[in-house]
Length: 126
Length: 126
Length: 126
Image (tube, rainbow over all chains, first blue to last red; front, top):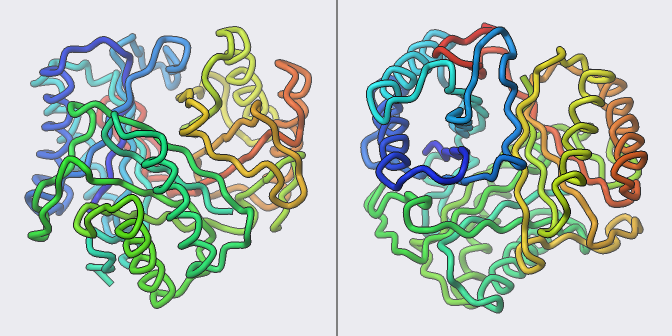
């Protein structure tokens, strides 16, 4: 069910972007209680002018390889689950495609079970 | 008030995309309690690599014509209203531009009445 | 912490878009309780067909220079803070790059403190 939006700078190869999508998906299945095949991911690539990311907020050093990941999902996860998920996601992206942990920004949006339709005009979770 | 984000694969004609926008708008007015002229819709077109949509989650068969529709709106609708809206939206998109019901993914985000400004720096609903 | 998404019509110069980003950031620091350097802003530029904004909803006259600003932030602000922020933001964008107040549409999404990771896979606010 999560809807994932990934934003990054333009110019990365397709395999690099696929590794990010795979990492997010696998971390969601592994650590966020998301069923297999529940994969809905949109990627937007931005020119430098349209990707304005703090180089040092919270004294975390970010580079031009920063990735902004926003995930809309049901609001059922505990704080501990979110923490575990954040750590798992960063670990996966570090392994492949090799993104520095400092460069991974994650934002969650929690919504209700009747806020989703996966097709056919039905609220499958309501 | 709703802010609508529509994502689809790149390459559809302008008339096709207009039909989607019209369908979403008309379904909102018809079934979601949205006033006429309250139309704020952003469309993003994605290359195949940046549009990663499960071909079969929940055993719903999705094609390259899948459309992801995310709507931020006030959190005042009941579950029944949401169900009616999902069904109406899918019906409209099936009629024009002819999108299979399986290919319509909908995500809602509910927010508060003081989360909106329609212009002039005023919170018109607060 | 806020994640800002700005959408506008394609074709504005880089300096114009930078002025919008600066204005949003400065208004957030000034009037929305956002720390300095907390700047995470994504801009998407849309062709006319993909930027469908009501020309007159609520009898506010919008032009092709309309800007749609959606901000995901913690849900801790009061209605008064939001009102002050909306007014400050519109004032700044009017001063630079010279956007008409009627053309500024703002949508907020409130989330929880454990919905954020600013890097390193840690939920810094939780």
